[in-house]
Length: 426
Image (cartoon, rainbow, N blue to C red):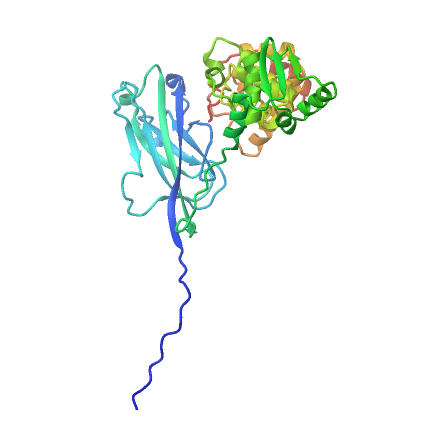
């Protein structure tokens, strides 16, 4: 009798998964203005860029005008990318580019991205770990090259943080398009279909819909309920410019900022005051009609315009219209750049019109001092005043003994200032 053979057991449908290792990339542009003044700060001392986020970690560019290696005797400039936040064994690819400012496009590029790495991506063990070049460029050659123009250097860097994940959704997925409800409501506003309320804004009329306004703004809700009781279909508004009210309605219906050249223009490059910009006036309208998302959008636009010359007035604007996130950024920026901000024209406006903000700035400066004592920074905020920007390797911190005297010193012009940038670190 021939042997019997058993059939293989029935199988269920096989499952699948996909392991993906890729990089999350981000870039930062770092401009160093006043290169000749930065020279001489000392070997191993750097100028740091603002921190930027890539792959969930904070990063910064460190530029060493006199080099990082004492053995080179300041013959080279050094450039490094540093891990500026907590992290362990962060694997990443890097690219450093020194920009050719002649327009010829002959940039100096050091990159991991365009070549295979025998040992894999670079690993940064802990916060403060760096990748870069001690001999990035010979200083004598740099100073006679097209990389230096008008005493200015431009460095671009790209960081690619390596991440790994097991993903099955990419094998079988259905793409859902972005919501277009804002487009539909926007058409309702533009076509004036079924409108039941008219706003007369300095002679210009805007048609709108009570239900939409009531749903979006508690202030409109109160105003329009009163209007309904009075059977009034037209409301006169005399204290808002038509273009501002148009931008306000655009947000209410479409949930985004109106596309306007004036809205995107930077006040730092404009002859008009920050108070007169469309963004500032829209921030006022957001505060008036209790629209927190619009307020935050305006804060984000104004935040990009913060500089030594503009921060004082933007701080006053943020305080006036309850823009707390923007106010916090302005206070921190002012404390970190105290010497330069106090000497700005905008600071005179702050002293004359917003005296209560002085104490808040003092508290922020005190907080920065605590960061110094805790090792968070290498340079005291108050030290900017005590040494006038001296670059000698000496202690500049002073005990906080007389708060009143400190308050007076803050509003006085610093003495013996040599013009050193307050962003410079030792």
